Length: 417
Picture 1: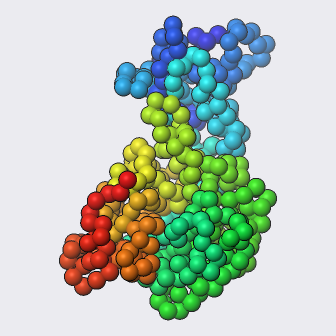
Picture 2: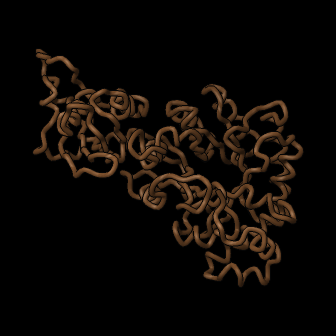
Picture 3: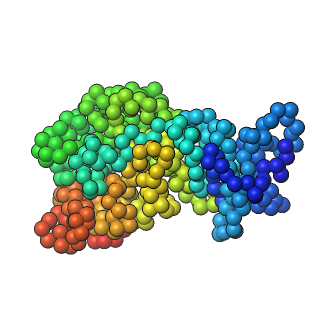
């Protein structure tokens, strides 16, 4: 077994192969073909030295099987992995193969995992989402419009009492979901259990006042056993959602939480903090498209995917990622994409034109920075979304919604930075 044995451009991937598309620039002195063979070798069962195994292990070898055209950031290369190479239901093991040592090999100057095609058997070994976009009607009253979420601002530093009040004001203003931000967990200024209990009590009051179902995306991110304990606590307090910082907590931690939420009937909101460490550089790392795939297989119900260039945070191909999250995946539920980061009422129509209405819209500063406060900001966002869904211009709806008129006067239709 030598490097050349891991390259076969005549090979046609089989239905039970995991097919990965990479983009790479070969290391000094290597052709693209030679680098691709080394990627397939290192990520399956080859090594730098020639091997003469006594048993038939070639059936577990990956094959670089398609060399594409050169582009700005390298050449696209397809590698097919036999399904038997992977442990069922272990995202950590899968990624140790397809995004492991190869990211640091001398054989490549840069390499980026762009996309994956998942065989049915491997995909079915993961649970997928419990609810997906069905949360719009099964847990909330959003119907055909985007559910609305908000993070209190400042996102850390508020006392529990202040945090709860912001949530209540947003709920009664028309927002569906209060959300913790990625770095609010269990700090002394806003302890986890007190915040959850008091916020859900305020939610109940907001539901009585508005006649709409409301809920709270509670950040349970912690050491794995503690995440499970916190999920239990949220369920005991009557919550319907938990939130996990899926990149920093890790895929195995997420899988443990998903197993527990099955018993608790909790939906999982996935925050992607740290994703840009993998996907920001177009020539290296792991694409957001792939990170979203891993998250869907592991069982998240919503995940942040970007704002199609309209917000302050960005990644590649938000619309394409969202389309994949809604696509058929061997019977798994879909995932509700979340648009977040720098959104405000004046750009909602552009956002929904770009991404459609089967998304969650989250605004923080674009609600709480409203000149008349959080409740008015929530009313402005809700009016903007309702108008966009119903085909009415924001300017027209603003004539009957003073809160929206004030938001448009303050922020206009410009995107923040």
